[in-house]
Image (spheres, rainbow, N blue to C red):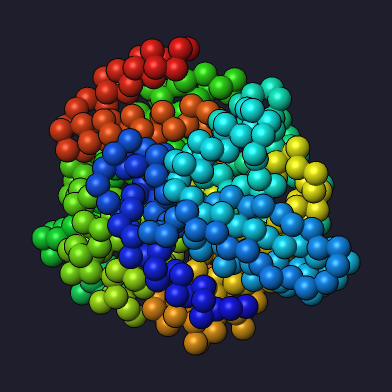
Length: 473
């Protein structure tokens, strides 16, 4: 693999001050760039796999030999161009009779998704392959006549090794239409230096009550904040809701943002805040350029975030090297329900009308799901690979030369292996209503509750009515 090229592109993407979580112009799903100013959700390149300043560029592979199939790829993520090219070269080496030449076009987030939608509606000008961000994906599977290829057969050779909840978020009626990039497992990042000084052993934190009590103790001992109540993201909110078996929609897909379990989760977080276990970090969530300095300076001790936050530590919180442990998230009591969930994501889709759809599906399944590709997802990006065969390869996951192994003071994959059998998702993430739900929480509800002290039930009731009016339900 061309790791130097990929590392350079990763650094370039990290420079772009883009958007985060949910109260911004897109969620921090698969990117390497930090958060920026708040704007409506789901509208610009996600922070975790940022397209970077050179969006609009094109990369074309050089492939020798006869019978080479050209596949046009659209993406909004510059990092994917180099990654796909390198993995396609490996495909060509292993499949000399099925060589492909990728022609990759990198566009701005909105431009690409809008152009793809128009191309599919008109039946003209669509690529063979397209990256579609999680928040946009439901709009491409909402119609009865789905223009994306059913990838169930292409996924089959890898399915037993892949975290199935990450396949499910790109599914409809039991069929898979997207290939995930990573798991984004929600984990706890603990500053052990700060916690040890306050007499707190993070390994004893197993439940949310333990978490709350540790936060109260930490506040009393230091006067500083333990963790954050999110106002511009829903990483912890979604996690806790999934752990309770809840969601923002009913089983038949009706809006239900004011149900009892949503109230329970927000009330629990509010109670932690009132008790001193949580404060609101500048920027409203950990993945934000306003927030990074406050963690770097030791003003907050804990982050509950998707696993891809590893890349933020190595890029923006460098003073914390050797001080951060990655651990399983707390849960409610001894429940056997979902322990953790994946956060964010970009799904790679194949256009069903492509004359080379089957080959494109096989190639991209190899690029996104094979163990070799997933090794590079960890080596270069520091993300948790969706193929769990990689998780047990200690030569890879505990390689002392790896920058992420060097940064954290616990083996980075230990917590993933502990939670591996209970990584779930929220059903509503697969629904076309998800962007609107995400937006109202991150621009209104969470701020009103955790900064304005609004009544939780009243706030949710108002949001339910507003969403019904907006979406016509």
